[in-house]
Structure formats: structure tokens, C-alpha cells
Image (cartoon, rainbow, N blue to C red; front, side):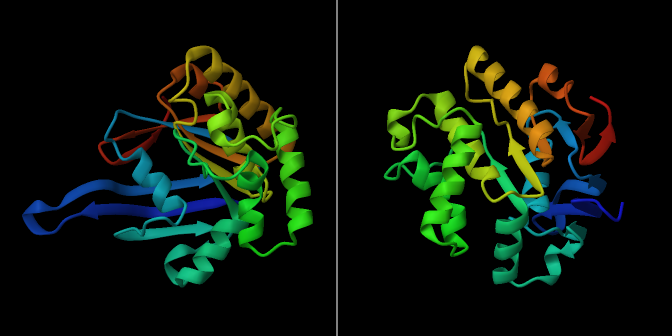
Length: 227
């Protein structure tokens, strides 16, 4: 447990107050170990995205704690949260969220430039990340010139370029056709094995979830083992 990348203890999230309060998450206990790949499944509206936001420090819990590499999000100021997030976590969403006016290379290098790394070094690392996802030939192409699968591969490269401890993914293949989704899933499995980065993946795809090392189900605000 001491080596865990992510730990949450008795995590709860409630929106609203009084009679209008809605408890989305209740007493969540969870840990993600180095190199582990874990799927979270559950019905729409069960709180899966809310849980990812809390784990990633994008939202704060109503009760409980989230520790990233031993640091508690709630005890950090906004600047420290941003630094920890940039250096420790990567994010991949259902929609790629690439900046349309920048090339694939520039998009992937962005997290490194934000942390003020030298531009030449950042572009070298971004090139390597794009090559790792099979896009070494698309460095100068903007998102509008890439296919859906290529855009998502670029987003995955961006998430990995900082060499994070964990990547949090919210339906990373949910916006792709079946063939492209299968290719991206195979890529993610290969990258997990090669990089040793922990993957926490929210997905509706039960076949993809079954290929994780653990499957957790979120139901009525509580997280249980098994899918």
C-alpha cells in the first residue's frame, strides 16, 4: 500500500445541500498500484467520471482523502496541485481535447512546455511519444487533418509524454468505431506493459474491461470488486 500511486480513503462526494443533497459517492476505498491496469464499470450516471475527477484533483471531495504518490490533494494549494498533476498524472478522455490550431507534435509537447522544459527537449520527447503510438509520420499534422483514431492516439501520447505514474482514462474508445476502438485498446494494453505506467480506465466495454488486471463496479455510490 505504501507504494501505491493513488489511494482514496472513505471518499465521498455530495452535490447540493439539505433536502436537495445528492450523494454521488459514498465511502470509497481504493488504491492503484505501480504498473497496474484497472477498469471501473457501472451504469451511466453512477459517478464514474466524478470519481476520476476526484482522483485527478480536478474536484475536491465532500469527505475523505485522495493521496497521489503520498500527497493529499486537499492539503495542497492550487499551484502545488497543478505541479503534482502535471508531473504525476496523465488524462485521456472520450473526446481528444486537442488544440486545433497546433500540430500533433505541438499538442503532445504542451505539458512539457507548461512545466517550462526547454523547447528542443520537449519536442524530442513528444516525437518519441508519437512514434510509440504509431504516429511518427504525422508530427506536423493538425487535429483536423487526422482521423478519429489518430487524434485519440495523439491524446494518448500527450498523456504519456510526461512519464506519469498513472494515466486516468474516461471512456478512451467510446467515441470510436469498433475496428478503431479495438486497435486503440490493443495499443493501450501494449503501452501499459512496456511503460510500467498504471492505467485506471472507465469503460462501458465489458470485453475491454475483462482484459484489465482488476475490474471494479461503481453502483449506488459504492465501489465493489468484480464487473
